[in-house]
Length: 193
Image 1: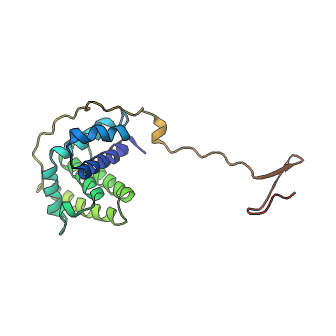
Image 2: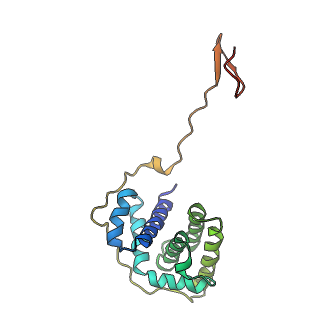
Image 3: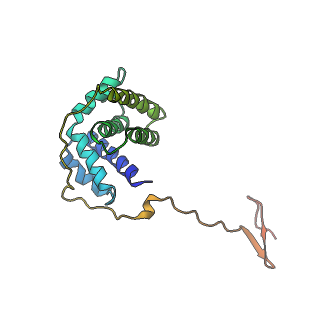
């Protein structure tokens, strides 16, 4: 898994955690990061997404509700709601992230963490918002403060191995060795010569 994908997933989980606890960023973030420490590589994007979404959440929620047919943000699943918040924040406040990347990442994360319908639900809303952004009908006018690493947060080690799937162990022959030859036995049969 890539560093940026990991940062987005952790940001979604941290925002979900804050929703459930109904506490502020300063109260929840250190506790969340103690149990799910971001790596040094993913920390900048993670903090930018979490603090940015929290900073303009009411504006983001208004945009989401405007483009979600008959769905209030409060009625959406916590996973879908926070994935949408992150994607809308990226689309409207992060010029360095291509809009299509934000949409694709949101859909993939929705498929991984949400329900069977999450990917299509997220795609429909974000596609409508993307069209409106292209027509310059939607924007958020806010100065997003530069995020700082809160006290008490320890970073996970930057280990390239955590971003790559583990290599499978080599397959070894199953059976008995007689005279230098491995005789295979059928699955489910007792050991017999």
